[in-house]
Length: 538
Image (cartoon, rainbow, N blue to C red; front, side):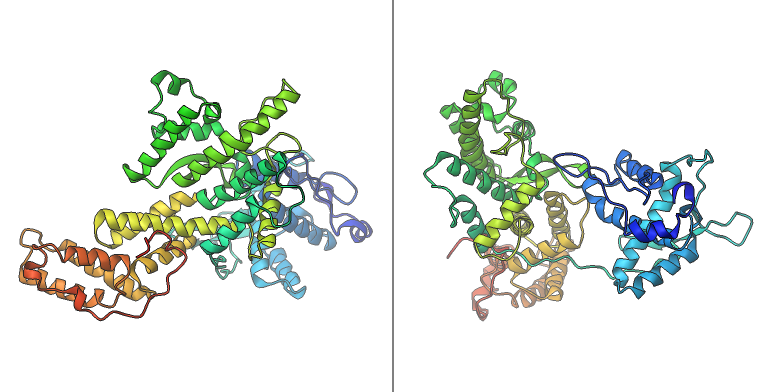
């Protein structure tokens, strides 16, 4: 269908099952290139995907589903003799029915229609002129009954769940929100997977072999970085030693070294042969947690859509990466390669391929993690390590805030939600962030029921809003009585109960020890969630 004209049906029937994708690039897929059945490039789609790349609307690796939907749309138009630039609302309605008649689910149909709408909305900017020299017309707009001209594909405004207004196709239907799979990998299973990465049960080589040991520790380091910083598989190969070093400098983790050396230090890998300097850095890491009460540092990584974000690298993760990977296996490997090839210069990435000496590919990381899950007999994949990180970091952030503020209000919860979203690299708080935070809150309060947790926060809000000048006025005492009734529903071994019990030891808040929390009936032991890995054993 070049130049907008339908191709003969014989050509369509032979090859429009449809045009093949050509993926350019060695290490990752390139932009999808779609051809007409006669072998000519499908220029509208070439320009469109080029526009997405140029404007950074979508990562190249995420374009494949969109490309398949648009290829299917163009095939449908060709089979029905409709030029691509003459599609309208009726054509889209007909395609929807065609899809449903072929057993496609309503959710999938609406997703495809949204992709088609997106194409027609952006094609005038992507391809200003068509092959015949005419300017590409505007296809999408709001049809009104007055003077403005009608658009073949009409629009409407819908309000999103966040309160923003979004322009969509007038015939689009609301899709049922797909709830993410939030089954969380428990810490014991995570440890099994990490153990499998470091000491494979199915050894292909003798574990006394140096290469095998270094490779296993490299793979273990990749698993640790997914479980300790929440990185996705495609983010792992992008971790830069220069960025890691810069982030550590910003947090003054090299201040034990002299000023000149710190200023000249470009990569923490430069300390690989200096045990004294290593001790100084590791000591600063311990101080960072013990004295400064910090949980993680932000390290730049390349995330979704090739956008840079700051991932929260926990301090114990940094310790492992430094001692085992950077100053250990990676350093030994580079020395060996440089001995064989003096001209070899390692790339600025944390993990290197044994085969090429270059950074690993996304697929290699995913395959290594998946195989470890299989060999450890644990259900899941590498992405489950990120979920485990999210649950644990939410618990740590909440615990730190409870200890810092000494109470649990909606303001505290909002602070925790925002920080968890930042640690996960989310632009804003979403359903996934709320899920992991709710797991942490349920653990801290000992209350599974959200309404009970909201009641606890309302009481704390009321107590803080009351007049602090007279701590023992009648209203304050009534509020305290209400608070005791609410808190009495909590298991005595939860963190929030411990905070309340500590407050009741203050003479100003509990004159004469009138309120005795120890008299409350002890409840049955509470089944703790995976998020509760910060509580010290009794």
